[in-house]
Length: 168
Ligand code: HEM
Ligand code: HEM
Image (cartoon, rainbow, N blue to C red; front, side):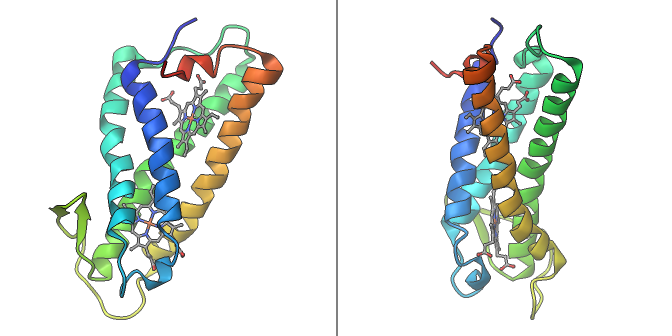
């Protein structure tokens, strides 16, 4: 069985935890201006930070090809699903960072200040903030579906898909 590289495996599980944490700490996002959640920003930016080693490792061959006995459409569906998750993993932190900047909130990554992505405005946070809020919920559904597929591979098809991502 071919496995994912250690970098990809650790980044994958750390990202899953960071996204869960960012979602939990987004509670009350509508009051972010008066009461900004620095933990939400740090956990969310962590997802963006981990994308880089992950993609580099992928380019260097850190992702094994799909299991041999899998049909072509299943491989394509998995590729499309993973691609969509990558779009969310990059887009969510960026839209959140932009939204915070527009709301005039200073953003930091575990105590390290990061520059604003745009100038602050008075009034509503704007469409990018709306997109961020909605996408923040959609990614959880996507990840849930993705997890169900992984468990289906493991328990129903009984192939090595989940074991390829095993950190141990
Ligand atoms: C993958 C990571 C992230 C997830 C899953 C996520 C999720 C969410 C969700 C679900 C909300 C809406 C909460 C509500 O309406 O009660 C929200 C709001 C918000 N998030 Fe994130 N977020 C992430 C990353 C970030 C980052 C990196 C930043 C800033 C650097 C950020 C800044 C904000 C701000 C400012 C709001 C309030 C927006 C508004 O009130 O219009 N988020 N986030
Ligand atoms: C927010 C949570 C999650 C995100 C964003 C996420 C994202 C991803 C992405 C993008 C890949 C493709 C990696 C690549 O080939 O470059 C992947 C692979 C994988 N994920 Fe997740 N994942 C999450 C949670 C989970 C959970 C909870 C499980 C298991 C229950 C899981 C099991 C797997 C497995 C088994 C693979 C390898 C699939 C294969 O070899 O085709 N993931 N994940």
